[in-house]
Image (cartoon, rainbow, N blue to C red; front, side, top):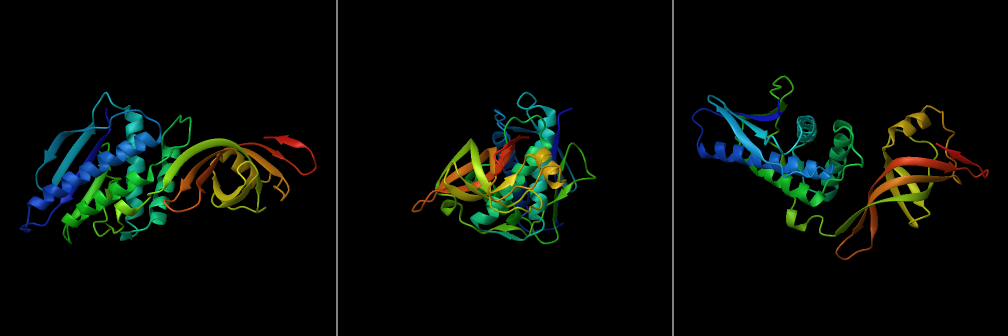
Length: 283
């Protein structure tokens, strides 16, 4: 059975401008379709993501749409819905998003979730930040159509129990036309790096001094097996003179009037550590 997206809109009886209810639903469907396409592109799934309307239920408006059967497999489709709903769950915890930094944090979280939720991926997902900005703007426009006291819910695969409430108070207040204007080049390379800190918690904010690129940057470790072994003490702590050789995905970001920066770096695979004692330890 194909997974499906259900949008339930509990509107106020007697509300003014009832046409805005249908405009909001149209925008929510458009937003989710564009988000699904963004996520499919992020995992390298070459599909033209399209919805078809399956049903509309009276009372509160309950629209059910499905991806066209031949465009994407059901298990990937379901994984995209789960990842998308987790993004909207993030937005339920705040009422405003406005900066490039905030959008970038959302993109990083979405990449992590796609990596966890979609099986058998060859490369780590990469979300186009500029496209995400316009998707967030569209979602904000839909929220503006809803009135206080109304409720909107997203659900996947007829799973009403785990339906995601939409925070209709959330707004995107940035200017999409002015965000992420610099040149972004996504790369995956094998790099040699010094780790600047010897004690690490979690997978975030490891600081590296890269010998190969001759740059300093922060990176997350997404090689879970290696990270678990390191944190468990199975792998000897990395010293300040030890060289980490790893496969790294990163963006080279060049602002319109600025200097190149390494951003959104992720250590995909730790290959070896060359210790300062002269020995190489294969991992």
